Image 1: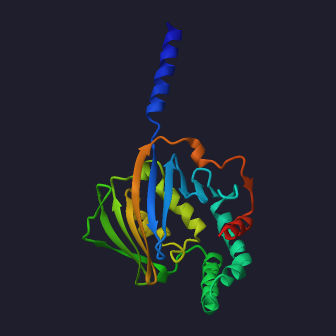
Image 2: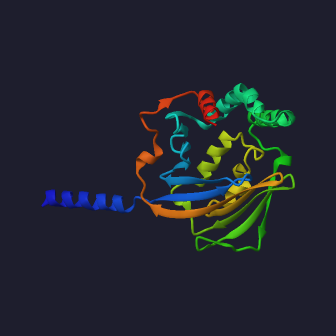
Length: 267
């Protein structure tokens, strides 16, 4: 009788574990660039891991292991490291490639392009990790409850130094926080972006707090007089294979500057 009790206890515990495996998320976003080009980005989320990107390049964020992997699917290469190593690798890679990138611009725009690249480098390289008072982000709640994929959303406009940077329409019905620790994710991204909203306003505490239990189903990012419009076209809540969050073992590992060069070569 004791053996049977042990057997049934084992079965019940395993059924309980199976039933408590949380399903992950698949979210597909369509983006329209200022040049009229349409792209699709797919995001996978499960067990504190996220994969994002398209056919040519992918990012994998493993929050529990504090690791980020960047994959060049075209050349079957990748880099992996900590968020801090990512930031330092980007600095090194941009310093090596800045002349090549500037040369791609028309002569009359090369000076401006160089200044822009050097400004990005300075933000990555010199910020002490603490946002400056003038970089404080503000936002406004707008009366605009647009429906996206049948979900009712709430609109928010975000500003940096008085300039509108992004508009989002969020839905609390899409709550990925069950599968992704949003506090841990925000800290992870802050390390990658040197805690500076000038690099990405999405790293600002105000933005992170707002989307902690809601997901942006529509976005407009403002780049001066240009806009990048994004809208989620597919949302699925399902169990995902672990292979989605691991690098293909046949891919070749590179340093981050080498990977940046290979991406530049492809483009």
